[in-house]
Length: 109
Image 1 (tube, helix red, strand yellow):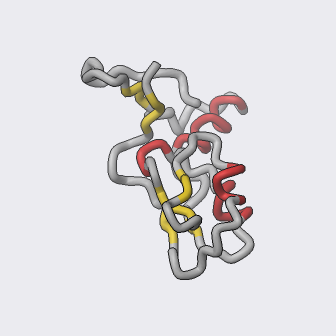
Image 2 (tube, rainbow, N blue to C red):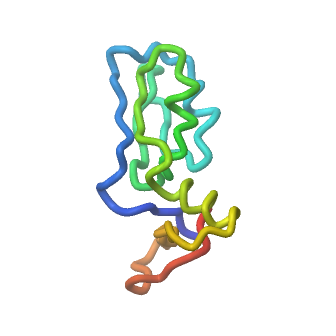
């Protein structure tokens, strides 16, 4: 199976490398492995398009090195769907190792 993809190049996820001390909390809480460690033991954004903007990383970073506008992306769509709301459809795609069919949608997350 391929990886989950939100919308390419639109995620609000940002990392301030100067504030990061490498505690790894963001990696522990990220449900889609959008964040990893670099070679010097600090956080790095390894798959920006996998971020569903849930906000877990920014809420759990003790040094405020990560910011994301939570609730604007896929996570909000999942919550709205569970609550029976019609607006806010999810836009996640399954991206396979080969080129997927254009516009193939999946159920989110």
